[in-house]
Every structure is written in C-alpha cells, then in structure tokens.
Length: 214
Image 1 (spheres, one colour):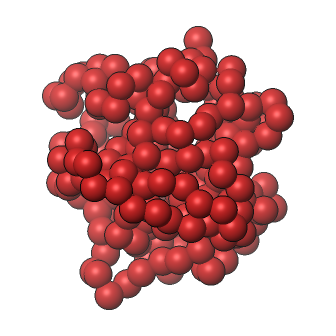
Image 2 (cartoon, rainbow, N blue to C red):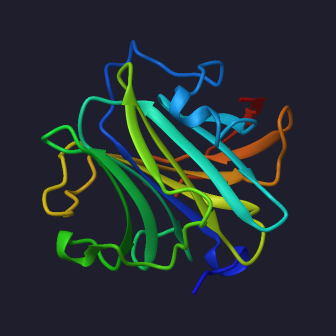
C-alpha cells in the first residue's frame, strides 16, 4: 500500500561514502546522457556536503528523483519515514558491487540491525514508466527512480546517512555519518525551501536553500 504525504511525513535518505572534500557537485552539472531523456527539467537543490537532489512531481503524484553525490564506494539510498526515524521506514538503495555491476533495490527498514533491513520489501511503489537506475560517471553516483504516491509530497523530513561498505547479499552495513533536513517538494525552480539540518537527526538549526532548474 502506498502511503500519502500526511502519513508518510518524512523522507529518509541514506547516502554513500563521500569522496574527498575538494571534489564537489552543483546544480550546474549536467546529468549523464543515460538519464537526460527521462529526467530532464527537474528542480534542483544542493542538500548536504556534495549531495544534490533533483526532483519533480506531476499531477498523478508520480515523483521523479535523481540523487547524486561524489562516490568512491559504499551505498546510497533514499526513503520515506512516518516520523523522521529510520525504524519502520522504506528506502530505495543503490550501489556499485565489487564486480562493478550496479544495484538498486527497495528496502524495508524494520530496525537498526543489518538483519532488520530487508531488500525487496517496504511500502514504496515504483512507477511503471521507468525502472530504477544507478550509475557512476566521473566519480559521481546517480540514483534515478520514479515513485507513485496517493497524495502530493510537501515538506518532508529528510535523513541523510553515509555508508562506506559495499553491500553483500543485499545486506547493508551501518552508516558512517548522518544528518537531517526538511525539504519542500512543492517549491518550484527559483523559489526556496527551508532546510533543517543536524548531525544527530534532531537539531534546531535551519537554513534556506535556493532552487535552480536542472
């Protein structure tokens, strides 16, 4: 069952290991050619360190997302939570395996131990239009996917976390770092959203982030 914005309430993003700080990303960077056709015209905002979120949602409540960051190894995910916590949330997680093959799957985050993070489970529903994609180009990883919801997404609590280990048998290792933001998915290009950020997931520090067309 797909959960609406009122019940979902929170967007969880679990993200890959960071590349060196001198390497950055911005909304001025072009998308890889493999993604440009299906994911053009997205709004864009830098959200944390080198992480950039591109998105758009249509009248049918289909959310298109491209999440990107500098990448060397590890996993990147983006999910939704009822209350801003990891437990009982669902996520889309992508990584490049040890043999170089790309992987992207939904996960149900039922608890904090690896055995409670279960692949191919959860309440996220992928759109029928395009299959989820993950690719690496010029030391950047891109997760591109479309999700269907029963209501438009509005302001969402977004959790960001860093995991450095490559998953084995779809088992995710514990994150290495994390932060929390509130992201407004109803704000169009060139407008603003309020970002709520915290290394502990629950800070009172806020900042304003501008949008640009991607």
